[in-house]
Amino acid sequence: MRIDWYKLAERTARAVIDALPGDIRERLADVAITLDPYPPPDEQAEEGDESALLGLFTGPSLAEESALADPLPAAIHLYVENIRDEVGDDPAGFREEVRTTLLHEIGHYLGLDEDDLDARGIG
Image (cartoon, rainbow, N blue to C red):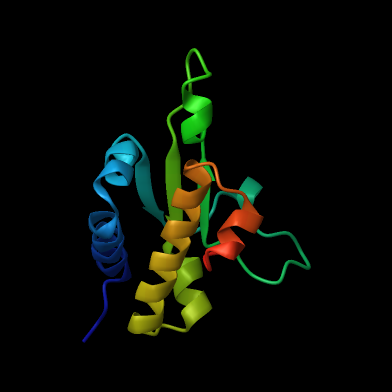
């Protein structure tokens, strides 16, 4: 059976969002979540980096939105092919990595930095 990794990523991301507390889901309502094959060239990992970029949060964090007169929209990008490469085409590992990456990027939207995310086990 051939796996549609994008549908699997979409279902997994939806399940992650659905499992969040209602107030967090409300705050995420205007945040676009995209499933992209790879990051754009200007976001690619640089030579010597240990791993490829799996996800990226762009735009203002929740705290910054209210301070900006005309904020750019917030977005979370999940890089499906990089996630797939990271887990070696293992569906269970893929779902777990989508979950972890999405929670990590949601954390950035909520204003958490890398240390905060590490402390929560999603660094």
